[in-house]
Length: 224
Image (cartoon, rainbow, N blue to C red; front, side, top):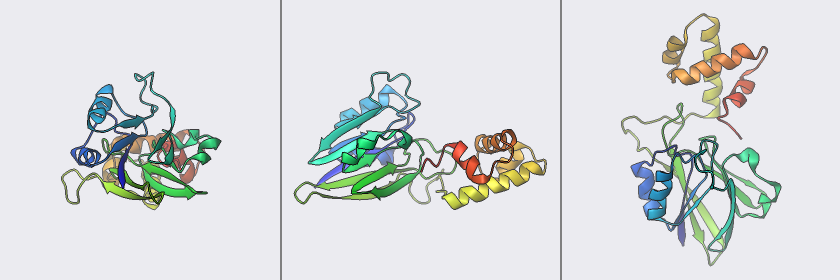
């Protein structure tokens, strides 16, 4: 059995909980939005690293934007944004991507498409997650474990927000905006950062006739 740590969107932050998982693995995959060369150095000191460049990694000019590799008999393909996955990724056993900060596992054909979420700074109210893949080289099977990188009850816990919750959030923000409330009041009332409330209001006001799904797509957090 071989344990592989899968992380993404660290944005310059390596949490202790994430590093504990990495230290117990034989390799680490990072699907981009790394946030600095120091993150790469720390990970490489811990385990063999496979990494691609994300959209915020401007300084990492030599970093590949996509990567094909084999680990213990399994074929991997990795890219930061799912929208940039190429058709020939179907040759992979496991496709790893990031960008949305939302954990997701799904099978397309025989391949697992895995987004480990973000284990970096909290974004909006999304969960802080990563994944550990256990590869069985002999039987050519694998399993995936979702890891929550903030323990239940911990101070500063970021609550997981599902698609239904986000849909209702956008509706409520729009309602408050139309009622004439300012951004600070809207954010406090709905329990979100002012940045998110401001983005929702700006998209709604600059795209006449847009619906909630259209706003969610333009927020760039679903990428499903």
